[in-house]
Image 1: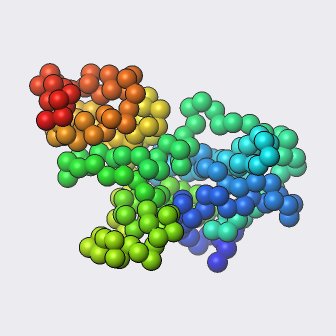
Image 2: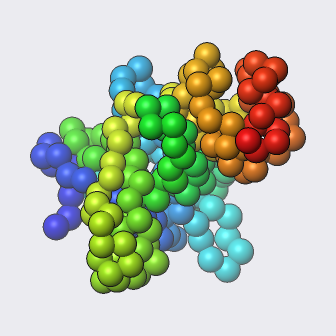
Length: 231
C-alpha cells in the first residue's frame, strides 16, 4: 500500500526495498532513487533531508529536497519540482548518504565484543518526515537483497528473521565523518581498549592509512601492539 506524505500513520520500509525504484515528476519518470541524504535533528533518530536520484544516459544526478516529495512508497517516489535542471547537483562534501555510508558497513558491538554487518536499514514515515530507525544485521535481509529470501531458512535455519538494533544505540554520524563513512562505529573512544584485538584488526582491514592512525591513537600501547599482530 502506498504511503502518502500527508498520511500521519506510521509506515515502515527497508532501505534495500526502495533503492532503485522510480522517481516521478509530473507523471514522468525522471530517474531512480539512488540514496537518501540524512541529517541529525537533535533527537535519537536522524531524518531524511534530500533524496538522491540517479539518471541514465549520462545525465547528472538530482538532489531533491525532502519537502518536494509528495508521495513515498515501496514502488515509487513522486516529487513536485518545476525543472530538473535546478536540481542537478551532488550532495555537499559533509553530507551523509545512507546507502553509501552505512549499508554493508561493519559495526562494533561493545556489549558482545563482536562485529556485525549492516545488511539493511529500517526507515519510518511519520508525520510527513522520514526517520532512520533501526539497522538490521540478519542474514535474512542479505538473502532478500540477493533475491534468495526463499533459501534463508535452509541456509541458516537458526538465524532470526530480523536482528535489529535501534539507531539510538548507533554512534552519532557526526562522530563518524572523520572515517569518511567507511565504517560505522558503535563504540566510544574511551571503550576501544575493551574490545578484543582480533575484532579491531578485522575492522582496521576496511580502513585506509589515515583512518587506522585515528584508531591507533586511541589505544594503549599493549592493545595497539596486539591489534597490529591480530592477537
